[in-house]
Image 1: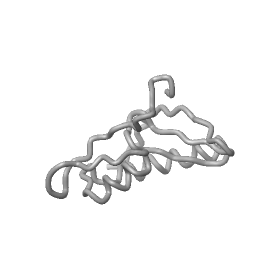
Image 2: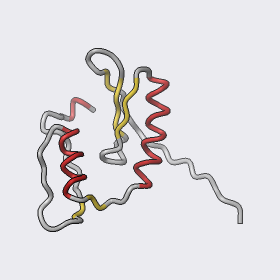
Image 3: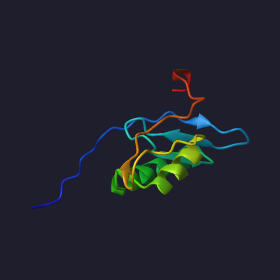
Image 4: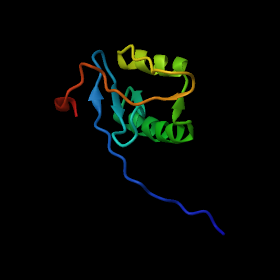
Length: 99
């Protein structure tokens, strides 16, 4: 059988970065984030971020969770032994107005 291509719409709202550039997160894929200098480059980077996100395991080690939490501005440490599922937590300063 021949492989099929499935087009799935994802949404991301570009945000400007102080000092230049843009970043965005795919809302349907928590933690799937990209940044770039231009909107065109951001779109390409988001497509690659989706590919990378889908290829990663949903189970995070404590080290991976700490790295992601540091990038998001938090210090969340998942309880228990490694590996533990990492529930997505948005940064504490994030509000619905940011969406």
